[in-house]
Length: 234
Image (cartoon, rainbow, N blue to C red; front, side):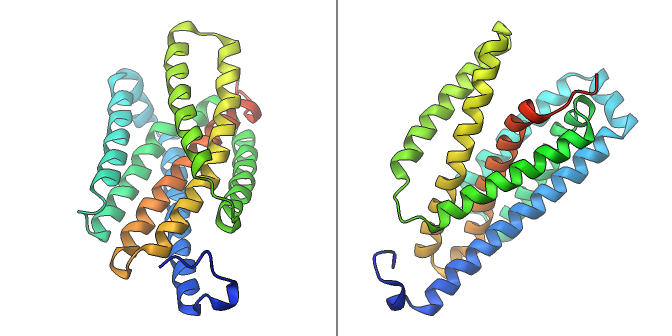
């Protein structure tokens, strides 16, 4: 049952506790996945064997990207059929693969600028996620608009792979930051609403799916902000 329309004094304590516990599991899973991604990315960027392999085999990056898409689709589409343990394992495998795919950023940008951008991302993400959790406004319409904008962003990014337009790249970067800032709030609200209605048996799977959504929001927001705050090693 959804208790959003009830005054706080009439909302059962066990309901509030259950929703809070579910959201805590979501954030713990997301945070651990980010830590895994960071360590894997750092290790890969400092491994001559890995770097030499990637340089000698350009197709390997495509394999990583395809594996990422496959894992996201597999977790999202099959979440109701997967056990909590399996879904969690796939999520952390995705975090490892993504870490390997992101390792080039440590070669392109200075460590100080990456750290600075990470903390800016964490602050922005945290503020928007809190807003999405506490706001009484319905963000559904905003979510639909942001989803369409995301599709446009993907199309524009593909076009610019061939156009190589600096102006379009800046527009894409600004739009990317705005879209993922909004998606962070929207996804948080959606996860909270699902937590309010989810039976106890499905909480574990929801914690994984929610963590995946917020993880993707954080990573994408970080990458777009890095284009503004990252300092090149050149």
